Every structure is written in C-alpha cells, then in structure tokens.
Length: 313
DNA sequence: GGCTAAGTCAACT
DNA sequence: AGTTGACTTAGCC
Image (cartoon, rainbow, N blue to C red; front, top):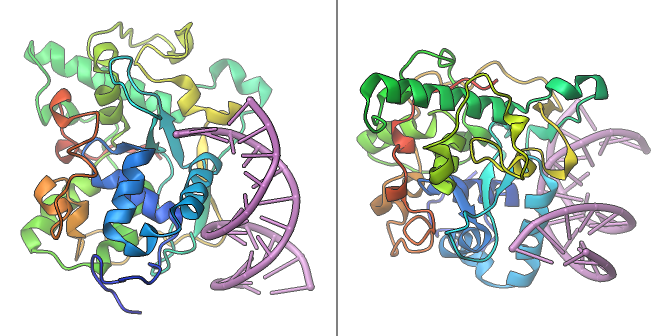
C-alpha cells in the first residue's frame, strides 16, 4: 500500500474515513478541538479530493460527528463569537483503528447507557477525568502559589501510571505514512501520546470558569444547575444524546495488547500533525487550523505538548 | 451469508 | 449547524 505524503493523493480519494480525517484535523490543532468550519478547511487544504462535492462529504462528515460517540461537542464560550461549536475527541475513545487500515476501525467506540441503578453515581468518565485534572491543577496552584507550571501540573503522579493510547491513536492512523526528522517525531510523539487533551480543551474553551472556580475536590460534577459543570464542562457535551458514560470501545475482534513498535518511540509522525504551527502545513500557509482558531493557544496556561500521560482507561 | 463500519441522502430542528 | 433515520456499499468472519 503506498504511503504518500501530504497532498500526494492529488485528486484521488485518500484512504481515510471521515472519522480518521476528522480526528486528524482535531489533533492537528494545539487545542485539540476545532469548529466544524476549521475541520472542513483542514481536510480541503490537505486533500484536494475534498475540494469538490463539498456538500456531499461535508454532510457525511457532520453525520459522523453526531453519530459517533467518539466525538464530543464543546460549546463556545460566551466571549467566543462564531458559528458552531467546537468538536473534540472523546477522552476514552482509545485506539480504534486496525493496523494499516484507516478506512475501517478495528472497533467501534460507543458510549454505553448507564443503568438506572447507577444513575446517582454516574459521573462520566470524562467528567471524572476533568475532576482529576482539576485536582491536579489546584494542587499545582497550591504548591507554586502562582500560575500553573508548564509541566509540573501533570507530573504529580496521579493517574499517570499507564501509557495512554491517544484517542484514536492518531499515530496509528497516519504515523507510518510520513517521514519526519527524528527530533520532530520525538517531540511530536510526546504530545501525541500525552494525556488526553480534553483538559486543555476545556481550559481553552472555558478558562474563566475552569481556572478560577469553584473546585471542591469532593463535589460531584453534577452539581451544576445549568448546562455547565463546575469545571466549565458542558455536561451535555460529555453525555450527549442523553447517554451516559462510561464509554468503551466495542471490539469487533480481539484487540492486540500492544502495537508493535509503539511501546518505544514511534517511527514516524506526520509533520502536519505536529503542534508546531510551522510544521502543521509544510507546503501551504497554515491558516486554516490552529492559528485562526477562536481558541488561541495564548489563552491556555498549558500546552498539550507539555502534558504528561494520563490514564483514562 | 451475517454482521458491522462506513458512506450517502434526506428530512428535520 | 447539528441530529436522526433509512438505505447502500464494502470488509471481515
């Protein structure tokens, strides 16, 4: 199977599903969340095939966003004008793609409805994750008495013991398709395999709430009377469709315990997936994704590239 | 052939 | 923009 790089598909349809493409787009931006229009731009910028028949594939893409539980919708902040919500990857969606095949997932990510008797305690995994991150954040704040450090926030040794497979393991999707300099591959992989960036997404989307509040470490996240939790997380986004977590990938065949070669450094990372704006789009101005995103990196106190692995499984 | 993921279309909000 | 359902196509067992 040929492994062409960016834009080498020319007008041919790239061997990626819409889910893959969407995940790529989301992963390409530092905030790990993109509005729909930016997802469109990302895909059209990199795959000429999708510059035509936009109505058709964009409808399909929207269908995928809504239909697949691996995507979560994050409403814009009130002070972030613009159309549409942000879209991000679900914290627990894991690596779903079969080795080598990015048109068909190895397993389907599905949010499982919680049974009624679990309802009183049915905090979503995502919400729980956010709570943990909030605790870490507060701990770091208390320790430093200042703004959050770039690294130490996520180096407190809590829930960071396992090697987290990035949502969709995007490195699984395209990592082997591109050759990049080793140093870049290393730094990129650090960010790619780091903990799920939802925390960062939310601090980005709702820093005014996430950073300052209100975080009773024992308080259940469901205390919010509005649509938003104490962490600025729109609960509806985490449990969209009225469903509740936990969300689990549903295997359709035995899942290998590990990806060969993934325990060590990954061989190759696509340059355009790097969080470095310069490397996002090596052959064309990188305008469509991170730089024009309403949620600017400067709004965040932490960078995804500095996050350490956080186990959510 | 059955199952399931993916893609498409369309109606609706 | 976003959701949902129906239907078709295709890959895997």
